[in-house]
Image (cartoon, rainbow, N blue to C red; front, side):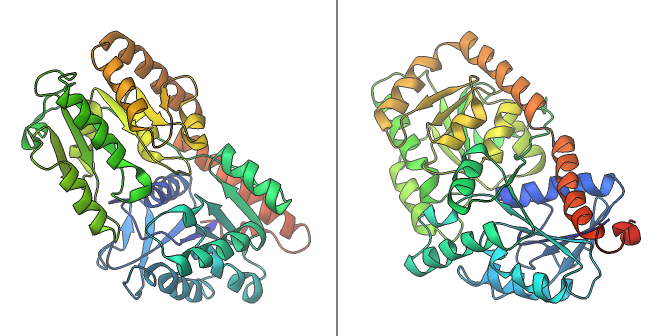
Length: 388
C-alpha cells in the first residue's frame, strides 16, 4: 500500500507528540512492507534527509511563522500528493486537516484519513482568530475524511456526540527501552532517583507553572530531601514569553533544572532514572510523554483531566486540575515512599505494554486503511495496484 502522511512538522521527531506519533507509525508501517512517505518542513527536518528507517521523506517549503507554517506546508504537500498515486493520504491534527477536502474532490480514487489528536483551540498560545479557525477545522476533520481516527476515549465520546458519526479509536503508543547508563545526567547536576521529571513543550496549557510553584513551596517548607531536584525537559513553541515566566518562577532555585529540548540517549537516561513523573496539563489529547514515562516504570502524578485519567487508569495518582496545593500534598506524600512509588511504576509499565504497543497501533491503523479501501474497491478496482 502506498501511504502519505501530511500535517506533521517532520521526522525524526525532535519535539511534539504528533511528530513522535507519525514517526513511530510510519516506521512500523514501512517495516510491514508498505510504501510510506512523510512530508517534512525544512525548519524542522533537514532538506538533505531523504529517508528515515525505510520511510521516504519529502521536504517542501512553508511560510515559517507561528500562524502560517502548518497551513502553508499542508497546502503545498497536498498539491504534491495529488500527483503521486497514493492509496491513502493521512492528515494529522485538526488544523492541517482543514485541507483534506482537496484530495476528496480532485482525487476521489484516493482514500483520505485523518487523526484527531486534540482540541487545539484550547491551547493558550492561539489568538482569537486562530481559535476560530481551529473550531472550523475540527468540524472538517470530523466530517470530510472518509475515516477519522481519535486517540482517546474522551475525544471519541466528544466527537461522536457532537457530529453523530462513528470514529475509530486508536491511541498513542509508547514502545520504550530503559537506558542503564547515567553518564549524561551529570551535565545537568542530577543523580538517579533524586529528581522529579516533567517532559512537555513549554506552553501555558501544559501547566508547568503549577508544578514549579508546588515544588517551590515544598522546598521552602523543608519537605524535600537535600538536593532533590525538579527537572523540566522541553522548549517553547512560539511561546518564549511563557518560558521566561517559568524561569522567573524558578529564579535562584538551584534545584530546578531546565534542560531544554532533549532527544535520543539523553532523553532515555532522563526517563530511566527519574524518581517519578508529573504531568500538570490543563488539556491533553493522549500524551506521548506520559505514556513513555509509564513505559519507563515511572509512577505518574497527573492533573485529573479526562485524557490523563484514561491513560493512567489505576497505575498513578491524580490531583485537581490547576490546584497547586493538591499537587504539593501528593508530591510531599510520595517523595518519601519509595516502595509505593516503585509498585505503582511497575503497574504503569505493565499497562503500557498491554495497551499501547506501537506495533499493535500500526496494525489497527492499517485495518482502518484497508476498510476504507475495501469500501471503495467493492465498487471499483483492487487497491493492491500500489502495494510495494
